[in-house]
Length: 342
Ligand SMILES: NC(=O)C1=CN([C@@H]2O[C@H](COP(=O)(O)OP(=O)(O)OC[C@H]3O[C@@H](n4cnc5c(N)ncnc54)[C@H](OP(=O)(O)O)[C@@H]3O)[C@@H](O)[C@H]2O)C=CC1
Ligand SMILES: CC(=O)N[C@@H](CCC(=O)OP(=O)(O)O)C(=O)O
Image 1: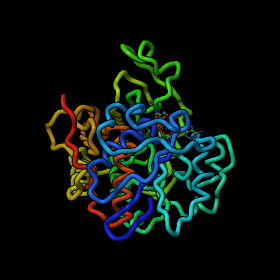
Image 2: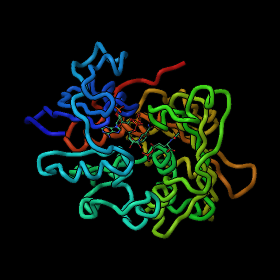
Image 3: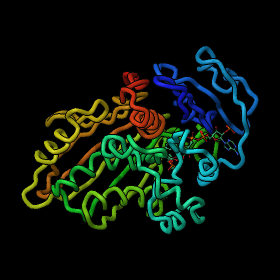
């Protein structure tokens, strides 16, 4: 994004014809301080907006103007490395700048990091927990969808020493939009509907991202058991998280800690005791995260449940939230949409 002056930011969206691009366009259509400067895609290059997104045909004018080389999971780094970060600010939705340890990046993403110096400048943008760093950043690594749903509840509890850093289990379910728009075997309707499956068992690349944030919070290395599942929803993530209580902690003290941490936050909500666990429909289409804390029937354990919309708080909404912080806008600008229910 580049600024024309106070109050005006021109936004270029690379990969605009994908699901996160569609969501950026939907949300930015009600943003008071932005205009769309460029949209890029590969197959969509040259197409008018209405041909790619009929639901956006009557919104902002424009078409898909540029084809860029090789915009795969690990390639936005090469594009970003060519941008003048003194005049352009970047929020990267891919995973390229999320892991600080470039050796770990190479292990999980199968190639050496292509811009190590730039990596050192990147700020990991879990907005509520990194606002001050995001404010001064030129390059924000937008968190992954699963890591957002896991870290929002876990980081404050580890920081406060209320849960044990060992034996944390994150059991997460995602809607199919998490896999992107290009149809793949497994995400076709006939394969994803009316069933569910675990994937990436003991090997998903979001595990080290979650562990990075939790280790920072705990001040010691933390490893987690993380298992993602594909469930037949269009959008939504529900993470059920199993933790062991630190000495003296209770489910009530965990809830109080989270409620205090997020009391002033417009997008993160902690359910009071006795309220039923959150449902993905309670956040659908919105930038909200909702979490609940429950005592297990066995002493010394608690269960956390956190829901987000994977393409809003888990991607495009959080990206706009970060942009708002970077540009000094109201953090909620463009993000006022109430969840769609039913
Ligand atoms: N979906 C989600 O819930 C989340 C996604 N992310 C991340 O956000 C990024 C985008 O994801 P998502 O929108 O779901 O992906 P999609 O598969 O829906 O879209 C991919 C986009 O990239 C474009 N593209 C692909 N190859 C090229 C190329 N060679 N040159 C130019 N453009 C290209 C596509 O253009 P075209 O369609 O025109 O070919 C399309 O616009 C990814 O890095 C993903 O990991 C992060 C968190 C959550
Ligand atoms: C359901 C599904 O497939 N979800 C994706 C995660 C979403 C995503 O795109 O995350 P990154 O930005 O880290 O790539 C996955 O598991 O690969």
